[in-house]
Amino acid sequence: MFSAFNLSHYRLSALSLIAAALTLAACNAPPSAPSVTALPVAPEVASGYRTDMRTQSATHHMAAAANPLAAEAGREMLRQGGSAIDAAIAMQAVLTLVEPQSSGIGGGALIMLWDGKTVQAYDGRETAPAGATEKLFLQPDGKPMPFTQAQIGGRSVGTPGVLRALELAHQKHGRLPWAQLFEPAIRLAEQGFPISPRLHTMIASDPFLPRSPDMASYFLNTNGSPKAVGTLLKNPALAAVLKRIAKEGPDALYRGSIAQEITAKVQGNANPGSLSMTDLQGYAAKERTPLCTDYKRWQVCGMPPPSSGGIAVAQILGTLQALEAQDSRFALPPLKPVKTTTPAGMEPAPQAVHLIAEAERLAYADRGLYVADSDFVPVPVAGLIAPRYLADRAALIGERSMGTAKPGHPDGIRVAYAPDRSPMRISTSQVVAVDDLGGAVSMTTTVEAAFGSHLMVQGFMLNNQMTDFSFIPEENGQPVANRVEPGKRPRSSMAPTLIFDRQSGELVATVGSPGGSQIIEYVAKSVVAMLDWNMDPQAAISLPNFGSRNGPTELEQGQFTPTLVQALKDKGHVVNEIDMTSGTQAIVRVRDAQGKATWAGGADPRREGEALGD
Image (tube, rainbow, N blue to C red; front, top):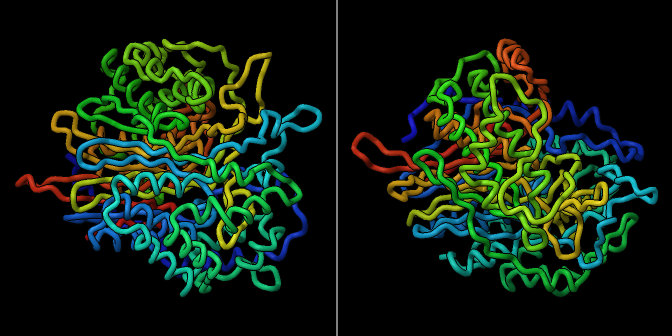
Protein backbone atom coordinates (compact mmCIF):
# COMPACT_ATOMS: atom_id res chain seq x y z
CA MET A 1 0.00 0.00 0.00
CA PHE A 2 2.88 2.37 0.77
CA SER A 3 5.57 3.00 -1.79
CA ALA A 4 9.24 2.76 -1.01
CA PHE A 5 9.85 6.49 -1.30
CA ASN A 6 13.59 6.99 -0.85
CA LEU A 7 14.69 9.94 1.22
CA SER A 8 18.22 11.20 1.41
CA HIS A 9 19.36 10.51 4.95
CA TYR A 10 18.51 13.60 7.03
CA ARG A 11 20.63 13.94 10.16
CA LEU A 12 22.80 16.76 11.48
CA SER A 13 26.12 15.34 12.53
CA ALA A 14 26.47 14.67 16.23
CA LEU A 15 29.47 16.97 16.35
CA SER A 16 27.59 19.91 14.86
CA LEU A 17 24.68 19.41 17.27
CA ILE A 18 27.02 19.25 20.24
CA ALA A 19 28.91 22.31 19.04
CA ALA A 20 25.67 24.25 18.69
CA ALA A 21 24.51 23.19 22.14
CA LEU A 22 27.85 24.10 23.73
CA THR A 23 27.72 27.52 22.10
CA LEU A 24 24.25 27.99 23.57
CA ALA A 25 25.52 26.91 26.98
CA ALA A 26 28.31 29.45 26.88
CA CYS A 27 25.73 32.18 26.30
CA ASN A 28 23.65 31.13 29.28
CA ALA A 29 25.19 32.40 32.44
CA PRO A 30 23.05 32.06 35.57
CA PRO A 31 20.11 34.38 34.86
CA SER A 32 18.66 36.95 37.16
CA ALA A 33 15.06 36.45 38.25
CA PRO A 34 13.06 36.50 35.02
CA SER A 35 9.70 38.10 34.44
CA VAL A 36 6.66 35.87 34.15
CA THR A 37 6.62 36.44 30.38
CA ALA A 38 10.16 35.18 29.79
CA LEU A 39 9.34 31.62 28.76
CA PRO A 40 9.24 31.06 24.99
CA VAL A 41 5.81 31.02 23.36
CA ALA A 42 6.61 27.52 22.06
CA PRO A 43 8.20 25.69 25.04
CA GLU A 44 9.35 22.77 22.88
CA VAL A 45 12.03 24.84 21.17
CA ALA A 46 13.68 23.54 18.02
CA SER A 47 16.97 21.71 18.55
CA GLY A 48 18.03 20.88 15.01
CA TYR A 49 16.68 19.03 11.99
CA ARG A 50 18.43 15.75 11.26
CA THR A 51 19.11 15.26 7.58
CA ASP A 52 19.98 11.57 7.36
CA MET A 53 16.73 9.90 8.46
CA ARG A 54 15.49 6.88 6.55
CA THR A 55 12.66 4.41 6.92
CA GLN A 56 13.46 1.43 9.15
CA SER A 57 12.25 -2.08 8.34
CA ALA A 58 11.30 -5.04 10.50
CA THR A 59 9.76 -8.44 10.03
CA HIS A 60 8.21 -9.16 13.44
CA HIS A 61 8.08 -6.12 15.73
CA MET A 62 9.09 -2.48 16.03
CA ALA A 63 9.14 0.36 18.56
CA ALA A 64 9.58 4.08 18.00
CA ALA A 65 9.98 6.92 20.49
CA ALA A 66 11.30 10.47 20.69
CA ASN A 67 14.58 9.31 22.25
CA PRO A 68 16.71 6.35 21.07
CA LEU A 69 17.19 5.04 24.62
CA ALA A 70 13.41 4.83 25.01
CA ALA A 71 13.00 3.14 21.63
CA GLU A 72 15.67 0.62 22.61
CA ALA A 73 13.83 -0.16 25.85
CA GLY A 74 10.67 -0.82 23.86
CA ARG A 75 12.47 -3.10 21.46
CA GLU A 76 14.06 -4.94 24.39
CA MET A 77 10.60 -5.82 25.70
CA LEU A 78 9.38 -6.89 22.25
CA ARG A 79 12.41 -9.14 21.80
CA GLN A 80 11.51 -10.82 25.08
CA GLY A 81 8.05 -11.63 23.74
CA GLY A 82 6.30 -8.58 25.15
CA SER A 83 3.16 -7.00 23.76
CA ALA A 84 2.88 -3.54 22.26
CA ILE A 85 1.64 -2.15 25.58
CA ASP A 86 4.57 -3.78 27.38
CA ALA A 87 6.88 -1.87 25.03
CA ALA A 88 4.98 1.36 25.62
CA ILE A 89 5.33 1.04 29.41
CA ALA A 90 9.08 0.47 29.14
CA MET A 91 9.41 3.46 26.80
CA GLN A 92 7.36 5.69 29.11
CA ALA A 93 9.57 4.82 32.07
CA VAL A 94 12.73 5.69 30.12
CA LEU A 95 11.22 8.92 28.73
CA THR A 96 10.56 10.00 32.34
CA LEU A 97 14.33 9.90 32.77
CA VAL A 98 15.77 11.02 29.42
CA GLU A 99 13.07 13.42 28.19
CA PRO A 100 11.80 14.98 31.46
CA GLN A 101 10.84 18.19 29.70
CA SER A 102 8.12 16.44 27.72
CA SER A 103 6.58 13.54 29.62
CA GLY A 104 6.86 11.30 32.64
CA ILE A 105 5.13 9.50 35.47
CA GLY A 106 4.09 12.87 36.91
CA GLY A 107 1.91 13.53 33.86
CA GLY A 108 -0.78 11.89 31.78
CA ALA A 109 -1.30 9.88 28.59
CA LEU A 110 -3.89 8.85 26.04
CA ILE A 111 -3.52 5.37 24.57
CA MET A 112 -4.95 3.75 21.44
CA LEU A 113 -4.46 -0.02 21.44
CA TRP A 114 -5.12 -2.79 18.91
CA ASP A 115 -4.93 -6.34 20.28
CA GLY A 116 -5.42 -8.00 16.89
CA LYS A 117 -9.19 -8.16 17.31
CA THR A 118 -10.53 -4.93 18.74
CA VAL A 119 -9.51 -1.29 19.14
CA GLN A 120 -9.43 0.12 22.65
CA ALA A 121 -8.88 3.61 24.03
CA TYR A 122 -7.42 4.26 27.49
CA ASP A 123 -7.72 7.67 29.11
CA GLY A 124 -4.94 8.56 31.53
CA ARG A 125 -5.59 12.30 31.32
CA GLU A 126 -4.95 14.27 34.50
CA THR A 127 -7.92 15.50 36.53
CA ALA A 128 -8.53 18.79 38.31
CA PRO A 129 -8.15 18.53 42.10
CA ALA A 130 -11.31 18.68 44.18
CA GLY A 131 -10.23 22.08 45.48
CA ALA A 132 -9.94 23.67 42.03
CA THR A 133 -12.51 26.27 40.95
CA GLU A 134 -13.32 27.93 37.64
CA LYS A 135 -11.57 31.08 38.92
CA LEU A 136 -8.26 29.24 39.33
CA PHE A 137 -6.46 31.27 36.66
CA LEU A 138 -8.19 34.63 37.16
CA GLN A 139 -6.39 37.55 38.77
CA PRO A 140 -8.11 39.70 41.42
CA ASP A 141 -9.27 42.10 38.68
CA GLY A 142 -11.00 39.22 36.89
CA LYS A 143 -8.53 39.10 34.02
CA PRO A 144 -6.75 35.83 33.11
CA MET A 145 -3.24 35.31 34.44
CA PRO A 146 -0.22 35.41 32.13
CA PHE A 147 0.57 31.81 31.19
CA THR A 148 3.81 31.43 33.13
CA GLN A 149 2.26 32.92 36.27
CA ALA A 150 -0.25 30.10 36.07
CA GLN A 151 2.24 27.43 35.02
CA ILE A 152 5.14 27.69 37.46
CA GLY A 153 4.32 26.10 40.82
CA GLY A 154 1.59 23.97 42.31
CA ARG A 155 -1.40 25.91 40.94
CA SER A 156 -1.09 24.16 37.56
CA VAL A 157 -0.64 20.56 38.76
CA GLY A 158 -3.41 18.10 37.93
CA THR A 159 -3.74 14.60 39.37
CA PRO A 160 -1.27 12.46 37.34
CA GLY A 161 -2.86 9.70 35.28
CA VAL A 162 -0.29 7.95 33.10
CA LEU A 163 0.58 5.07 35.46
CA ARG A 164 -3.05 4.21 36.13
CA ALA A 165 -3.77 4.11 32.39
CA LEU A 166 -0.75 1.92 31.73
CA GLU A 167 -1.78 -0.37 34.59
CA LEU A 168 -5.31 -0.70 33.17
CA ALA A 169 -4.03 -1.51 29.68
CA HIS A 170 -1.38 -3.92 31.01
CA GLN A 171 -3.91 -5.86 33.08
CA LYS A 172 -5.79 -6.67 29.87
CA HIS A 173 -3.03 -6.82 27.25
CA GLY A 174 0.34 -7.22 28.96
CA ARG A 175 2.37 -10.38 28.35
CA LEU A 176 5.47 -9.67 30.44
CA PRO A 177 5.47 -9.17 34.23
CA TRP A 178 4.87 -5.54 35.24
CA ALA A 179 8.16 -5.32 37.15
CA GLN A 180 10.21 -6.43 34.16
CA LEU A 181 9.05 -3.44 32.14
CA PHE A 182 10.87 -0.99 34.39
CA GLU A 183 14.26 -2.69 34.26
CA PRO A 184 15.73 -0.58 31.40
CA ALA A 185 14.74 2.71 33.05
CA ILE A 186 16.04 1.64 36.46
CA ARG A 187 19.33 0.54 34.89
CA LEU A 188 19.75 3.87 33.07
CA ALA A 189 18.80 5.91 36.13
CA GLU A 190 21.36 4.12 38.26
CA GLN A 191 24.19 3.90 35.73
CA GLY A 192 23.52 7.24 34.09
CA PHE A 193 22.76 8.43 30.58
CA PRO A 194 24.51 11.12 28.52
CA ILE A 195 22.71 14.45 28.30
CA SER A 196 21.50 14.73 24.73
CA PRO A 197 21.79 17.89 22.63
CA ARG A 198 18.03 18.38 22.78
CA LEU A 199 17.79 18.04 26.56
CA HIS A 200 20.75 20.40 26.94
CA THR A 201 19.05 22.94 24.68
CA MET A 202 15.85 22.75 26.72
CA ILE A 203 17.76 23.17 30.00
CA ALA A 204 19.76 26.13 28.67
CA SER A 205 16.74 27.93 27.24
CA ASP A 206 14.51 27.68 30.33
CA PRO A 207 14.73 30.84 32.48
CA PHE A 208 12.72 29.33 35.33
CA LEU A 209 14.81 26.23 35.88
CA PRO A 210 17.46 27.96 38.07
CA ARG A 211 14.70 29.04 40.47
CA SER A 212 13.81 25.42 41.26
CA PRO A 213 16.41 24.10 43.73
CA ASP A 214 15.72 20.46 42.85
CA MET A 215 15.99 21.10 39.11
CA ALA A 216 19.04 23.32 39.48
CA SER A 217 21.00 20.75 41.50
CA TYR A 218 20.16 18.06 38.92
CA PHE A 219 20.52 19.92 35.60
CA LEU A 220 23.01 22.72 36.37
CA ASN A 221 26.66 22.92 37.38
CA THR A 222 27.62 24.55 40.68
CA ASN A 223 28.24 27.86 38.87
CA GLY A 224 24.70 27.81 37.48
CA SER A 225 25.61 26.87 33.91
CA PRO A 226 23.80 23.99 32.14
CA LYS A 227 25.55 20.65 32.30
CA ALA A 228 27.25 19.97 28.99
CA VAL A 229 26.10 17.67 26.22
CA GLY A 230 27.38 14.18 26.94
CA THR A 231 27.55 14.66 30.73
CA LEU A 232 26.57 11.40 32.44
CA LEU A 233 23.41 12.17 34.38
CA LYS A 234 22.42 9.76 37.14
CA ASN A 235 19.08 9.83 38.94
CA PRO A 236 19.17 7.52 41.98
CA ALA A 237 16.01 9.09 43.41
CA LEU A 238 14.01 8.19 40.29
CA ALA A 239 15.59 4.72 40.25
CA ALA A 240 14.26 4.18 43.76
CA VAL A 241 10.78 5.39 42.77
CA LEU A 242 10.72 3.11 39.72
CA LYS A 243 11.81 0.15 41.84
CA ARG A 244 8.87 0.78 44.14
CA ILE A 245 6.48 1.12 41.19
CA ALA A 246 7.87 -2.11 39.73
CA LYS A 247 7.28 -3.93 43.00
CA GLU A 248 4.10 -2.30 44.31
CA GLY A 249 2.42 -1.12 41.11
CA PRO A 250 1.09 2.43 40.64
CA ASP A 251 -0.06 2.51 44.28
CA ALA A 252 3.55 3.42 45.05
CA LEU A 253 2.90 6.81 43.43
CA TYR A 254 -0.72 7.34 44.46
CA ARG A 255 -0.43 6.34 48.12
CA GLY A 256 2.18 6.55 50.87
CA SER A 257 5.36 8.61 51.10
CA ILE A 258 5.74 9.54 47.41
CA ALA A 259 2.15 10.78 47.27
CA GLN A 260 2.70 12.74 50.47
CA GLU A 261 5.75 14.43 48.98
CA ILE A 262 3.84 15.26 45.79
CA THR A 263 1.04 16.97 47.72
CA ALA A 264 3.51 18.76 49.98
CA LYS A 265 5.35 20.17 46.96
CA VAL A 266 2.13 21.24 45.25
CA GLN A 267 0.66 22.92 48.33
CA GLY A 268 3.87 24.28 49.85
CA ASN A 269 5.30 26.68 47.28
CA ALA A 270 4.92 30.34 46.31
CA ASN A 271 2.16 29.53 43.80
CA PRO A 272 0.33 26.73 45.63
CA GLY A 273 -2.23 24.33 44.26
CA SER A 274 -4.82 22.20 45.99
CA LEU A 275 -3.83 18.66 44.91
CA SER A 276 -4.42 16.38 47.92
CA MET A 277 -3.89 12.80 49.00
CA THR A 278 -7.61 12.24 48.42
CA ASP A 279 -7.21 13.37 44.79
CA LEU A 280 -4.30 10.99 44.24
CA GLN A 281 -5.91 8.03 45.95
CA GLY A 282 -9.17 8.53 44.10
CA TYR A 283 -7.76 8.85 40.58
CA ALA A 284 -9.06 6.31 38.06
CA ALA A 285 -8.04 5.81 34.44
CA LYS A 286 -10.91 5.17 32.04
CA GLU A 287 -11.49 2.90 29.10
CA ARG A 288 -13.26 4.96 26.43
CA THR A 289 -15.06 4.03 23.22
CA PRO A 290 -12.66 4.67 20.32
CA LEU A 291 -13.71 7.22 17.71
CA CYS A 292 -13.53 5.39 14.36
CA THR A 293 -14.55 6.99 11.05
CA ASP A 294 -14.23 6.05 7.39
CA TYR A 295 -11.83 7.86 5.09
CA LYS A 296 -11.85 6.59 1.51
CA ARG A 297 -10.73 2.94 1.70
CA TRP A 298 -9.48 3.20 5.25
CA GLN A 299 -10.88 3.37 8.76
CA VAL A 300 -9.17 5.87 11.06
CA CYS A 301 -9.50 5.40 14.83
CA GLY A 302 -8.61 8.05 17.39
CA MET A 303 -9.30 9.24 20.93
CA PRO A 304 -12.72 10.56 21.93
CA PRO A 305 -13.15 13.44 24.44
CA PRO A 306 -11.59 14.73 26.59
CA SER A 307 -9.24 14.79 23.60
CA SER A 308 -10.17 17.00 20.67
CA GLY A 309 -7.57 15.21 18.54
CA GLY A 310 -9.66 12.28 17.37
CA ILE A 311 -12.63 14.47 16.49
CA ALA A 312 -10.51 17.08 14.69
CA VAL A 313 -8.54 14.56 12.61
CA ALA A 314 -11.79 12.82 11.65
CA GLN A 315 -13.31 16.19 10.70
CA ILE A 316 -10.31 17.22 8.60
CA LEU A 317 -10.23 13.96 6.67
CA GLY A 318 -14.01 13.84 6.31
CA THR A 319 -14.10 17.43 5.07
CA LEU A 320 -11.41 16.74 2.47
CA GLN A 321 -13.30 13.66 1.30
CA ALA A 322 -16.58 15.57 1.05
CA LEU A 323 -14.88 18.41 -0.78
CA GLU A 324 -13.49 16.03 -3.39
CA ALA A 325 -16.93 14.46 -3.86
CA GLN A 326 -18.50 17.90 -4.37
CA ASP A 327 -15.96 19.26 -6.86
CA SER A 328 -13.11 17.32 -8.44
CA ARG A 329 -11.10 20.54 -8.66
CA PHE A 330 -10.67 20.33 -4.89
CA ALA A 331 -9.44 16.74 -4.79
CA LEU A 332 -6.23 15.70 -3.08
CA PRO A 333 -4.88 13.35 -5.76
CA PRO A 334 -1.74 11.28 -5.18
CA LEU A 335 1.18 13.57 -5.83
CA LYS A 336 4.91 13.71 -5.60
CA PRO A 337 6.22 16.50 -3.39
CA VAL A 338 8.10 19.25 -5.16
CA LYS A 339 11.82 18.86 -4.50
CA THR A 340 13.48 21.87 -2.86
CA THR A 341 16.81 22.93 -1.40
CA THR A 342 15.26 23.30 2.07
CA PRO A 343 16.40 20.92 4.87
CA ALA A 344 13.50 18.54 4.22
CA GLY A 345 14.27 18.59 0.51
CA MET A 346 10.62 18.63 -0.53
CA GLU A 347 7.29 20.40 -0.11
CA PRO A 348 3.67 19.69 -1.06
CA ALA A 349 1.82 21.63 -3.74
CA PRO A 350 0.33 25.03 -2.72
CA GLN A 351 -3.19 23.77 -3.46
CA ALA A 352 -2.73 20.87 -1.02
CA VAL A 353 -1.56 23.23 1.74
CA HIS A 354 -4.51 25.52 0.99
CA LEU A 355 -7.15 22.78 1.17
CA ILE A 356 -5.77 21.09 4.29
CA ALA A 357 -5.36 24.43 6.10
CA GLU A 358 -8.96 25.37 5.25
CA ALA A 359 -10.29 22.03 6.53
CA GLU A 360 -8.28 22.57 9.72
CA ARG A 361 -9.73 26.04 10.24
CA LEU A 362 -13.20 24.53 10.30
CA ALA A 363 -12.15 21.75 12.71
CA TYR A 364 -10.38 24.13 15.11
CA ALA A 365 -13.39 26.46 15.13
CA ASP A 366 -15.60 23.59 16.30
CA ARG A 367 -12.95 22.40 18.74
CA GLY A 368 -12.82 25.75 20.53
CA LEU A 369 -16.58 25.86 21.07
CA TYR A 370 -17.79 22.31 21.61
CA VAL A 371 -15.04 19.95 22.81
CA ALA A 372 -14.27 19.32 26.47
CA ASP A 373 -14.50 16.47 28.99
CA SER A 374 -17.69 14.65 27.94
CA ASP A 375 -18.18 13.41 31.51
CA PHE A 376 -18.93 17.03 32.43
CA VAL A 377 -20.37 18.69 29.32
CA PRO A 378 -22.44 17.27 26.46
CA VAL A 379 -20.13 17.06 23.43
CA PRO A 380 -22.01 16.51 20.13
CA VAL A 381 -19.46 13.98 18.90
CA ALA A 382 -21.74 12.18 16.45
CA GLY A 383 -22.94 15.46 14.99
CA LEU A 384 -19.42 16.83 14.59
CA ILE A 385 -18.25 13.86 12.49
CA ALA A 386 -21.50 13.15 10.60
CA PRO A 387 -20.89 13.00 6.81
CA ARG A 388 -23.82 15.36 6.13
CA TYR A 389 -22.43 17.95 8.55
CA LEU A 390 -18.91 17.67 7.10
CA ALA A 391 -20.33 18.04 3.58
CA ASP A 392 -21.95 21.31 4.67
CA ARG A 393 -18.65 22.46 6.18
CA ALA A 394 -16.72 21.45 3.05
CA ALA A 395 -18.99 23.64 0.92
CA LEU A 396 -17.49 26.66 2.73
CA ILE A 397 -14.06 25.98 1.18
CA GLY A 398 -13.21 27.76 -2.07
CA GLU A 399 -10.26 28.96 -4.07
CA ARG A 400 -9.46 31.68 -1.53
CA SER A 401 -8.82 31.30 2.20
CA MET A 402 -11.75 31.96 4.49
CA GLY A 403 -9.36 33.58 7.00
CA THR A 404 -11.11 32.72 10.25
CA ALA A 405 -13.79 30.04 10.28
CA LYS A 406 -16.87 30.14 12.48
CA PRO A 407 -18.11 27.11 14.41
CA GLY A 408 -20.81 25.08 12.71
CA HIS A 409 -24.13 23.85 14.05
CA PRO A 410 -23.90 20.06 14.36
CA ASP A 411 -26.80 17.91 15.46
CA GLY A 412 -26.88 17.14 19.17
CA ILE A 413 -26.16 20.60 20.58
CA ARG A 414 -27.92 20.93 23.94
CA VAL A 415 -26.11 23.82 25.63
CA ALA A 416 -25.06 27.23 24.34
CA TYR A 417 -21.34 27.67 25.01
CA ALA A 418 -19.00 30.61 24.67
CA PRO A 419 -15.87 30.12 22.52
CA ASP A 420 -12.63 29.28 24.32
CA ARG A 421 -10.23 32.12 23.54
CA SER A 422 -7.35 30.78 25.64
CA PRO A 423 -3.98 30.72 23.85
CA MET A 424 -2.99 27.33 22.44
CA ARG A 425 0.00 25.51 23.95
CA ILE A 426 2.82 23.39 22.57
CA SER A 427 4.46 20.35 24.29
CA THR A 428 4.48 16.48 24.84
CA SER A 429 5.98 13.13 23.54
CA GLN A 430 4.88 10.13 21.46
CA VAL A 431 5.56 6.38 21.27
CA VAL A 432 4.32 3.70 18.87
CA ALA A 433 4.92 -0.05 18.78
CA VAL A 434 3.81 -3.23 17.01
CA ASP A 435 4.38 -6.70 18.46
CA ASP A 436 4.95 -10.24 17.20
CA LEU A 437 1.25 -11.12 17.36
CA GLY A 438 0.11 -8.13 15.31
CA GLY A 439 -0.88 -5.92 18.23
CA ALA A 440 -0.16 -2.20 18.08
CA VAL A 441 -0.17 0.86 20.28
CA SER A 442 -0.07 4.61 19.79
CA MET A 443 0.43 6.58 23.00
CA THR A 444 0.78 10.32 23.40
CA THR A 445 2.18 11.25 26.80
CA THR A 446 2.78 14.62 28.39
CA VAL A 447 3.58 16.88 31.33
CA GLU A 448 2.15 19.79 29.22
CA ALA A 449 4.66 22.66 28.86
CA ALA A 450 8.43 22.17 28.93
CA PHE A 451 9.36 20.73 32.36
CA GLY A 452 5.72 20.96 33.41
CA SER A 453 5.10 22.92 36.60
CA HIS A 454 8.85 23.01 37.39
CA LEU A 455 8.15 21.07 40.56
CA MET A 456 10.43 18.05 40.88
CA VAL A 457 9.65 15.16 43.23
CA GLN A 458 12.18 12.38 43.79
CA GLY A 459 13.72 12.78 40.34
CA PHE A 460 10.61 13.30 38.17
CA MET A 461 8.64 16.34 37.05
CA LEU A 462 5.05 17.19 37.96
CA ASN A 463 2.74 18.30 35.17
CA ASN A 464 1.18 21.71 34.60
CA GLN A 465 -1.83 20.16 32.89
CA MET A 466 -4.36 22.43 34.59
CA THR A 467 -3.31 25.17 32.16
CA ASP A 468 -4.97 23.13 29.38
CA PHE A 469 -8.28 24.33 30.80
CA SER A 470 -9.69 27.63 29.62
CA PHE A 471 -8.42 30.47 31.80
CA ILE A 472 -11.71 32.27 31.12
CA PRO A 473 -14.68 30.36 32.63
CA GLU A 474 -17.44 32.30 30.89
CA GLU A 475 -18.09 35.04 28.39
CA ASN A 476 -21.19 37.20 28.03
CA GLY A 477 -22.92 35.06 30.64
CA GLN A 478 -22.30 31.80 28.78
CA PRO A 479 -19.98 29.11 30.17
CA VAL A 480 -16.89 27.93 28.30
CA ALA A 481 -17.08 24.15 27.83
CA ASN A 482 -13.43 23.66 28.81
CA ARG A 483 -13.60 25.69 32.03
CA VAL A 484 -12.04 24.39 35.26
CA GLU A 485 -14.27 22.11 37.36
CA PRO A 486 -13.26 19.73 40.20
CA GLY A 487 -12.51 16.23 38.92
CA LYS A 488 -12.70 17.30 35.29
CA ARG A 489 -10.14 16.37 32.65
CA PRO A 490 -8.77 19.31 30.62
CA ARG A 491 -9.33 19.23 26.89
CA SER A 492 -6.41 17.77 25.00
CA SER A 493 -5.23 17.89 21.39
CA MET A 494 -3.46 14.54 21.66
CA ALA A 495 -4.27 12.38 18.66
CA PRO A 496 -2.84 8.85 18.95
CA THR A 497 -4.19 7.19 15.82
CA LEU A 498 -4.64 3.68 14.40
CA ILE A 499 -5.46 3.16 10.72
CA PHE A 500 -7.06 0.05 9.20
CA ASP A 501 -7.91 -1.24 5.75
CA ARG A 502 -11.69 -0.98 5.66
CA GLN A 503 -12.22 -4.03 3.49
CA SER A 504 -9.90 -6.52 5.17
CA GLY A 505 -9.86 -5.03 8.68
CA GLU A 506 -6.07 -5.30 8.67
CA LEU A 507 -4.01 -2.79 10.65
CA VAL A 508 -2.32 -0.37 8.27
CA ALA A 509 -0.54 2.11 10.57
CA THR A 510 -0.03 3.42 14.07
CA VAL A 511 0.89 7.10 14.28
CA GLY A 512 0.87 10.10 16.60
CA SER A 513 2.77 13.23 17.54
CA PRO A 514 3.47 15.64 20.37
CA GLY A 515 3.05 19.36 19.84
CA GLY A 516 0.25 20.66 22.06
CA SER A 517 -2.52 22.29 20.03
CA GLN A 518 -0.49 21.71 16.85
CA ILE A 519 -0.68 17.92 17.25
CA ILE A 520 -3.79 17.90 15.07
CA GLU A 521 -1.89 19.62 12.24
CA TYR A 522 1.03 17.21 12.50
CA VAL A 523 -1.04 14.04 12.58
CA ALA A 524 -3.34 15.19 9.77
CA LYS A 525 -0.36 16.01 7.57
CA SER A 526 1.30 12.65 8.19
CA VAL A 527 -1.91 10.66 7.63
CA VAL A 528 -2.68 12.48 4.36
CA ALA A 529 0.92 12.01 3.21
CA MET A 530 0.83 8.27 3.90
CA LEU A 531 -2.67 7.55 2.63
CA ASP A 532 -3.30 10.04 -0.16
CA TRP A 533 0.25 10.61 -1.38
CA ASN A 534 1.49 7.05 -0.87
CA MET A 535 4.57 8.17 1.06
CA ASP A 536 6.49 5.86 3.35
CA PRO A 537 6.37 6.77 7.05
CA GLN A 538 9.74 8.52 7.20
CA ALA A 539 8.99 10.64 4.13
CA ALA A 540 5.55 11.51 5.50
CA ILE A 541 6.96 12.57 8.87
CA SER A 542 9.84 14.53 7.32
CA LEU A 543 7.50 16.41 5.01
CA PRO A 544 7.42 20.05 6.17
CA ASN A 545 4.75 20.84 8.74
CA PHE A 546 1.94 23.19 7.84
CA GLY A 547 -1.67 23.97 8.66
CA SER A 548 -3.90 26.40 10.49
CA ARG A 549 -5.36 26.56 13.98
CA ASN A 550 -8.05 28.92 12.66
CA GLY A 551 -5.63 31.81 12.60
CA PRO A 552 -2.76 32.44 10.20
CA THR A 553 -1.67 29.66 7.88
CA GLU A 554 1.37 28.21 9.65
CA LEU A 555 4.40 27.00 7.71
CA GLU A 556 7.44 25.36 9.24
CA GLN A 557 10.16 27.97 9.25
CA GLY A 558 12.91 27.44 6.68
CA GLN A 559 11.14 24.52 5.00
CA PHE A 560 9.07 26.20 2.27
CA THR A 561 10.02 27.98 -0.93
CA PRO A 562 9.13 31.62 -1.60
CA THR A 563 7.08 30.36 -4.54
CA LEU A 564 4.75 28.38 -2.28
CA VAL A 565 4.49 31.21 0.24
CA GLN A 566 3.51 33.65 -2.48
CA ALA A 567 1.00 31.19 -3.97
CA LEU A 568 -0.75 30.98 -0.58
CA LYS A 569 -0.77 34.75 -0.18
CA ASP A 570 -2.31 35.02 -3.63
CA LYS A 571 -5.14 32.82 -2.30
CA GLY A 572 -5.71 35.22 0.57
CA HIS A 573 -3.73 33.38 3.27
CA VAL A 574 -2.00 35.29 6.03
CA VAL A 575 1.20 33.26 6.29
CA ASN A 576 3.14 32.80 9.51
CA GLU A 577 6.48 30.97 9.24
CA ILE A 578 7.25 29.53 12.68
CA ASP A 579 9.05 26.69 14.45
CA MET A 580 6.78 23.65 14.26
CA THR A 581 8.61 21.13 16.41
CA SER A 582 6.63 17.96 15.93
CA GLY A 583 7.80 14.62 17.25
CA THR A 584 5.82 12.27 15.05
CA GLN A 585 6.42 8.51 15.10
CA ALA A 586 4.75 6.07 12.72
CA ILE A 587 4.87 2.37 11.91
CA VAL A 588 3.07 1.03 8.82
CA ARG A 589 2.45 -2.38 7.31
CA VAL A 590 3.99 -2.85 3.86
CA ARG A 591 3.75 -5.72 1.39
CA ASP A 592 6.26 -6.82 -1.20
CA ALA A 593 5.44 -8.03 -4.72
CA GLN A 594 4.71 -11.52 -3.37
CA GLY A 595 2.31 -10.15 -0.76
CA LYS A 596 4.57 -10.76 2.24
CA ALA A 597 3.87 -8.25 5.03
CA THR A 598 6.59 -6.45 6.96
CA TRP A 599 6.78 -3.28 9.06
CA ALA A 600 8.23 0.10 8.10
CA GLY A 601 8.84 2.78 10.70
CA GLY A 602 9.86 6.41 10.88
CA ALA A 603 10.79 8.96 13.55
CA ASP A 604 10.69 12.73 13.47
CA PRO A 605 13.91 14.44 12.33
CA ARG A 606 13.00 17.45 14.49
CA ARG A 607 13.73 15.53 17.69
CA GLU A 608 16.10 12.73 18.66
CA GLY A 609 13.88 9.70 18.20
CA GLU A 610 14.37 6.44 16.38
CA ALA A 611 12.32 3.56 15.06
CA LEU A 612 13.92 0.21 15.95
CA GLY A 613 12.78 -3.20 14.79
CA ASP A 614 13.51 -6.90 15.35
